[in-house]
Amino acid sequence: MLQTGVLAQLIRALRCLPGIGPKSAQRMAFHLLQRDRQGARYLAESLLAALDKIGHCAECRTLTEGELCPICANPKRDRTLLCVVETPAEVYAIDQATGFKGVFFVLNGRLSPLDGIGPDELRLDILEKRFRSGEVKEAILATNTTVEGEATAHYIHEMARQLGVRTTRIAYGMPFGGELEYVDGNTLAHAFNGRKDF
Amino acid sequence: MSATGSDYSADRSRVLLENAVILHRRAYRETSLLLDVFSAGWGRLRVLAKGAKRSRNDQSRLLQPFVPLRLSWAGRGELPVLTGAEPDGATIGLDGTALFCGLYMNELLLHLLPPHDPHPGVFAFYLESLRRLASDSCRERILRFFEIFLLEEIGYGLSLEREAQGREIDPLKSYSYIPDHGLVETDERGMDSVQGSTLLGLQRQALESSNELQEAKRLMRRVIHHHLNGRALKSRDLFKPLGKVLSA
Image (cartoon, rainbow over all chains, first blue to last red; front, side, top):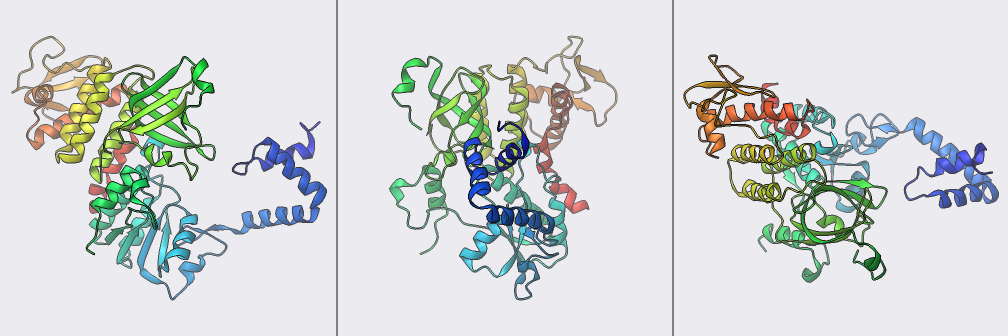
């Protein structure tokens, strides 16, 4: 009975959410239809509105409603400091946690040649243009510390170096409040090699 | 993800603490990883690491390329499941250009090495090459010898001592590579020709001058291109910006 019709379509649609299997999707569908029809309408309208209105910021490529995101549009932000991140979620994470006053650039991915993603697919030419404009004094490379994140950081570093832009890489090592004994060997090695004057 | 008593008993297709490295990993569903594994005794295979990305599980950090590992997996089917992972010695710290070279080697292995075909020799040479990449500055030489070794081991070996007619390579003559045929003597010295001394240098693992390295690179590029049936290697793009940005 559930295999056809609008209800089945709704259940299938809900499964596009991360972590939602058939059983959960069915529970959600029944909840929305039986207990919270108003909420369901609100959800549907919000989804449509978000899809219609939210695009990529012309400057930093994060998700935003307007032409520019609030960070890029803010005149108080220091435009000579450019923090390069992989995803829009990381913009929020850094902005909330660090008090960083510069602007961001979102790669929307990372260099992953074995997945077929090279510099051209990642549109690094847009970032190159930004470096060429001469506005950026320091590029903070805040890509992940995975193999792909490191490769991406190094590639951008080379590009920036040739264009005379200074680059810095976020530090990694001991987690805050971490205990040496329980930290994995790789992290500990990085923390040890990257030690600082006290 | 330690093995529980129940799945110990039945499964005969269980591999324990096998020497292995990860060539590539990609996300699978929300919390799992699909790993392209290169192991000493089982060759290249794909393994599913269930739940490896859950935050309380720090396996995700361990399951990275360029980390010598001991992996255990189980399952007869198409996609065995990872049952354990331990580091086996220190991580090979590749950074910068050495990291690009490592990615290039991984891409070569993914495309050239047939799955489920053990090549313990290639495995050992691969790890050795990675370690040399981490410390040695002449990365081109390391890559060329790895390419030669890999092709030889998987049966695409290039005869570097004799040309297609069976005559010995003369260090002073020029040769060009013809796919499925071999090396042929040529009078022209152009982009496609290789000096005999370069060929002998490749054979002896002794490439010296920058000219020899250049020639060897162009030769191996054509040979590999042929064996990949024209498929482009994406990791080569990583080496491009160095020249491109300057000239743009």
